[in-house]
Length: 185
Image (cartoon, rainbow, N blue to C red; front, side, top):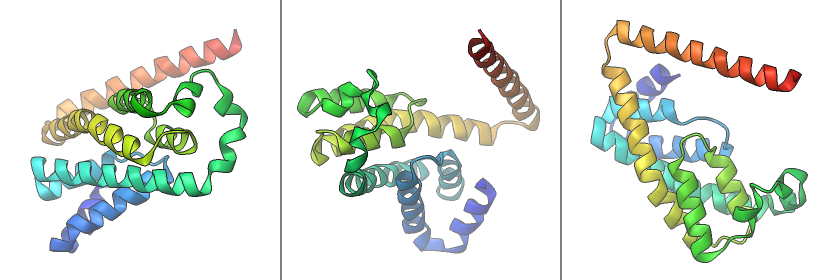
């Protein structure tokens, strides 16, 4: 997928910046598609810092567009069962400084799905300005780590990539096994 995105962006020259932003908005609105392949393509096509800033701008704009769309169209889902979960309620009922702190902290954590944070904040009490500021500031360090990791992976030798792939598969197997044990016992 990354290769196709690189070819796509390279084919459009100067418009590639705007197309990358648009792709990031679509990824954000969908809420479940990881954006790492687009970050990798941006770094390859534009270079590290320009690619980082294009990715950051795209994710920030995408989060705001998603927030607005979710708020307008998905508020009726605020009564669903999973939103009554104790870990979701703090963000759902937060506003002002509390919402800012929660969104900022959740954006720093790379394993927390962005779409879920945006959705809960959008149907909750968080204002657009608090969300946009906290989300963007929280994305900066998280995206920098992602960009740096992707850049290092792209620059790595073939043998290093193979070792990383094997280590990832082994780790995934252990996690899968642990989940299976919890479900069975």
